[in-house]
Image (cartoon, rainbow, N blue to C red):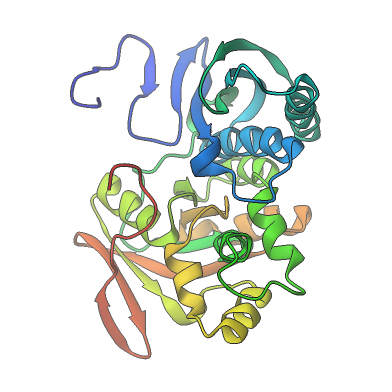
Amino acid sequence: MRRICRPGKGVVVGIGDDAAAVEMDGQCIVATTDMLISKQHFPPGTSPEQMGRKAVAVNLSDLAAMGASPLGLLFSVGLPRDLDVELVERIVRGMDRAAREYGTSVVGGDIDESDEIVIAGAAFGSCRKERLMRRSGARPGDILAVTGSLGAASAGLSILLGKKPAGGYRALTKAQLDPVPRIREGIALAGTGAVTSAIDITDSLASNLWQIARESGVRIVLEADKLPVHPLVLKYAEDAGMDPMEFALFGGEDLELLLTLRPDRIDRAFRALRRIGTALTPIGRVERGRGALVEKSGRIMRLPDRGYEHFR
């Protein structure tokens, strides 16, 4: 699609980033779309309200990765003919509450008949052109960093699918069922001038690292010992006899922001997130070259480009 669809007049960012951006009077309108299908995206235990909230969250997360302030959301919803009306209302109430929680609203959409629940969302926001964060700006010498903690959403999915014991891990299942987009963090970071590239962690940390490396034409070295793995992920992995790095590196859906930062302005980024109350952790570096590597205990090796991606 990127090869076929050439950007038109006024397009600042086209296909290939978290969202598109079109310039209007010195300001950019930032737009994205994300689709959720019940059998693939809503694990057992997902309530109708959580379906609606998640549809909002994944779309707003793309705006967060660009540093955009939300303006509104549209949803095209496919519904089975025999679905209970009350259940549909609960989905929409989940959408509405989540949108308002992040300072925006659902302003329209479409409803069609389908064999299963399909929620295709579109979010649009605004950002000054010079503040737009993209995947393609990483430079040698930059510092790799991530917001929050890693692995909770994918560990939560493992629990919901009944693969291992679930007691005492509500925070992990909540991370999967009710993810939090980093809207405030994205806007704050965009204003610091410290960010050279950004992406939200959806497919997996490893896969998203590769996306930044390819788009920026650089080599990224991830320092595995610095990863802020969620404490409950460590405990769950130990109890279940699993590797916590599988969740942190290859699980995805955390919706944290993965960033590269200018060393001379990194203090601005730390101060901006400290005011919000969100952790920012340096986890690696950007070098000349190509690809993504991982460094652990003094050894450097190629980081597998592995995560969830449709059709792979």
